Length: 236
Ligand code: URA
Image (cartoon, rainbow, N blue to C red; front, side, top):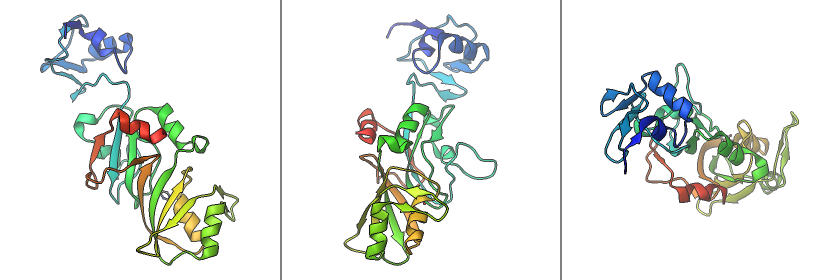
């Protein structure tokens, strides 16, 4: 690749030219180990190492990361005294503005999508767009026939909250395990739904967002960037 002005190169993705110049002015950009002071300095993107705030600089406008969330971690960008899902993002994928697209409870495990793309997050979270989230639900006692039907028809809670109809399938191996698909993400939704029909949840794991399954080779606490094809499976 040809040599290019560093301010121009920096502004090919997430930053405008003006913002790129400001990053340089603020001494936040390093080229091959030295702070960049001149916006006109030349860079060879194939061979040079560019760091922003000490982290490898990515030209991609947005980033999409799959995390296998362990228990005990909060679904937030930052927290003064608790470990967050964003804290678990590996250093080479970290950038400003990362947040979880949808929250799992502290004790829920599984697939969390972390991104800096607000519009994409809004699309997959809004029930209007029908992106299903699939959960593996373990309950204290099996659902009654009536309980299952109520979940499938949609529930109205005593406080007036309405839950849309859910897909509910009992495991063939264990009567206390269910696969459940919902398009909403209301506070404690699955736990409240199952408690309302007399089968409290004892363990909850999110396995899919849209058609994309959690990569089971990721150990709890591990995360990796999604490929373009995987990202498409979320909204397919
Ligand atoms: N429903 C819940 O009750 N908790 C979660 O973490 C996700 C869905």
